[in-house]
Image (cartoon, rainbow, N blue to C red):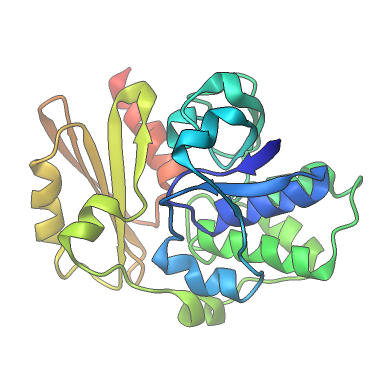
Length: 264
């Protein structure tokens, strides 16, 4: 059996991209047991699809083949490149060498670009793609959101307005659990763990900064969606670095790329 699968701790783009590509290719979409939808995207998902993936038990992963979406590092999902038959992603290539990478704000939007002349997307699928864009572009406010993305979603029949932000934005709760797990990703190539906190303001940011300071090889990101600012805390190989962006910086493109430049 071949399953389309996104990264662990799935967000709207991972879920929608998985379902979308499964529909196109005639596969099924799946998640690995123990993974829950990111809380901030639950309402987005509910408003555009019935979420019913196949759940792969951890001891059954090796019995199937997978097509990866929204990640190209197998450590973020099936943990074995030999199980992978293909990959479509929009993050920098740091894992699966044969990944097809598109510089779009959401993988779902890249899938639309790849297949729009070959596959007849229905209205529900178009809405799903738009919801994935809302999530991964932080409602059109992220540095990831570019003119080519805007043109494609207009072709889909949508326009991003502040109404979507006020309807769907959900602040991350301030807790040790959130500090450790919200938006969690592990970048195997750099032995780097990362989470992010999304808030309206910076109340509580000192606690998050101190949490990151106590971790090893950890990237912490605080998004101030009210004032369009991003604060980055990086503790890497016993060096603690802080960075501030005067805009909503994308982890998958802007922040990770800047991190790689510092390494080089």
